[in-house]
Image 1 (cartoon, rainbow, N blue to C red):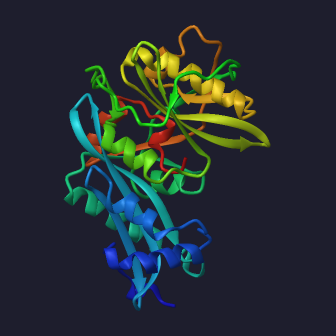
Image 2: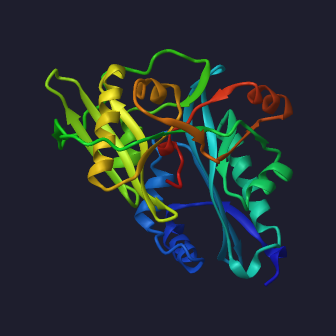
Amino acid sequence: MSTHALSIAPLQEADLPALTAFMRAQGQAGADEAHLRHWYLHNPAGSSAVMLARIAERIVGMATTNDHWFSGPEGRVLVAMPQKVLTDASLRGQGIFGRAYQASEAAGRQQGIGFFLTVTNAASTPIFLEKFGYRRLPVPRMLVLPPAFGRIRGHVTEFIAPSEAPDGDRSTWRMEKDEAHVQWRFLAYPGNGHLHRTFRFDDGTGGSVFLKRMKRKGVPLMLVLDLVPSHPDVAPRLLRQARRIAARNGCAAVLVLAEERMVRAAAGMVRATVSSGFNLLVKGLDEAGTQRLLGQRFELAFGDLDFL
């Protein structure tokens, strides 16, 4: 099949059944039409780019971004986060990946994004660096905490929304996560292995913990995807609850990306700090923008990453 007749166009609602079938045919057994609709078309930021590559009306590739609001040194900015890239196995190595990605980047620029931010796997990292103009940011650090034994108190069923906005610190880029974002990311379509627990304590405070159970080299671990406290001072109590949930689930350790707010929450707890090993890459709208971003700080939670 020749790629000379390749056409690329954005996802439409009517494309979802064919896209789901394509993804399953390429080994993505968990592809689900309803989830794709939710994930890309109902993003609360109202912005995403899903570009479908076709030959003779047949889908042969895709490249996507989900866009999120970030706050940081340059104010409030819509950031494009490249996610799923997939090419028909019979046509790999013929440039479909690159053309679909470039189309998704062009769509993001038209939608008013301020820059691009992604975490790439080992296979795609060289392509993003050498062909797409991305640059490396420092590898995010990670806290490793032991599970904690003790009674889990205050568990309730309803979601408790945060009552206060984050502190006004704009020295570091962070994703904005209001109630609509939390509902979209964690509650409407929980991911594989996800756990959600909400707590209301005796003093009237509370909040939610979002966790993911997983194994690495056969060792059960618990990732803290995010904490959503009703007040920032409650975060340490939520983290302790997460450690107790980890113990109940037989996990050997609790892993948390070392955002400043998580480091504060873990103050006084036994912990180690190690590299996450993530390839965190950034790209501005031009070379000057990329250089400027390389001098700024970025913090992410595990739950900010689409593959967890």
